Image (cartoon, rainbow, N blue to C red; front, side, top):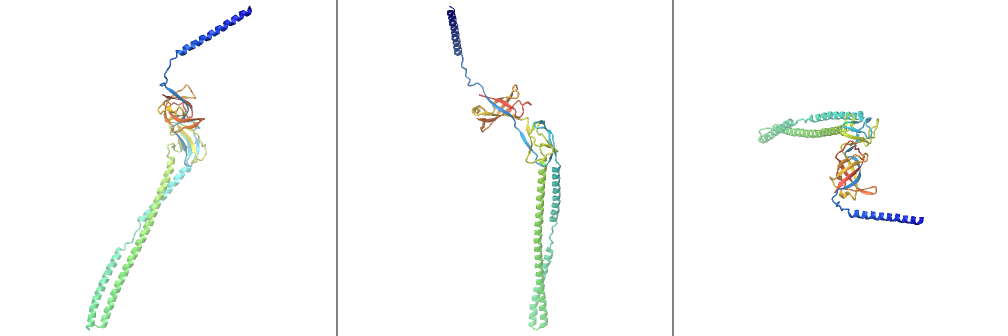
Length: 359
C-alpha cells in the first residue's frame, strides 16, 4: 500500500513538472511573437580604438657649441613654464672664440685699409710734357736740317760758278751733317722717352692689378670672418637661450630624456634633452582596417583615459594616415584626434580608449 502511494505521488510530481515546462514554453512563444522589428540602419555606430596621448609639438635640443654644463635645474619628466631655466652653461671657452674672431676681424680691416691706401696712392710719372718737348725739338731739328739742305744746294751752285771756295763748301757740308745728327739725336731721345713711358705704364698697371687683387682678397677674408662671427653669435641667439641658460620656450612644457649632468662637456652631435608643448596634446589611435572606411575627418570622438575612467573628453578626428601598418597581428591605420576640452590631467603617453562616432 505504501508502495502504491509512493508511485502515485511520484506520478503526480512528474505531471506537475511537465505541465510547468509546457506553460513556460508557451509563454516564450508568445513573447517572441510580440517582438517588434526596429530599423537600425540610421542609428549611430561607435568604433572603439586604443590610443596614446601625444604632443603635437616637440623638440630635441642640441647644444651646437662648446660649453660646460654647470647645473641641471630640472628633473626628467618635470613640467615647467615659459622661460623656466633648464640648464646653466659655462660659456667662457665659447666667448673666447668669439673674442678671438672679433680680433681677427679688426686686424683684417686694418690690413684692408693699409692695402687700399697703398692702391689709392699708386701714381704714374707724367712724361707727356717731356715727350711733347722732344717732339717739338725733333720738329725744330728737322726744320733746321731741311733749311741746311736747301742752303747746301745753293752753295753747291755758287761753288760750281766759282763764287766760293772748296773749303767754304766743305765747311757748310759739315754744318749740314751736324744738323742731320741733331735730327737723329732728337729722334733717339723721343723713342727712348716713349719706350720708358710704355715700360713704366706697363709696370704701373701690373702693380695696380696686383695690389687691387690683394685688396679684393682681403675684402673676401673680412667677409668670411664676419660670416664666421655671425654664425658664432647665431648659435647663442636662440629662442631657448637667455644669457648662459637654456630655458623653456613654451608656456606649458615637459622635459624628458635629459642626457647631461653637471660638469659634462657639450657635444654637437648629442641631444641635450627633449621638450614637449603640453598646450597642444592630441590622441594618436590605431583603427583596425575593417572599420577604417567608416572613419572620416571631422568625426566626433569620446575619449576616456585609462588613468581615470570617470573622466571623459571630447575630440575630433583631424588626420587619417594614408598608410596601413601591422600591429599585434592586425593591420591598423593611425588616426589623430584633437582634444577639445584639454586640461592638466591628461599627460603625454597616457593610455586612452577612444570611441569614434560614425553613421
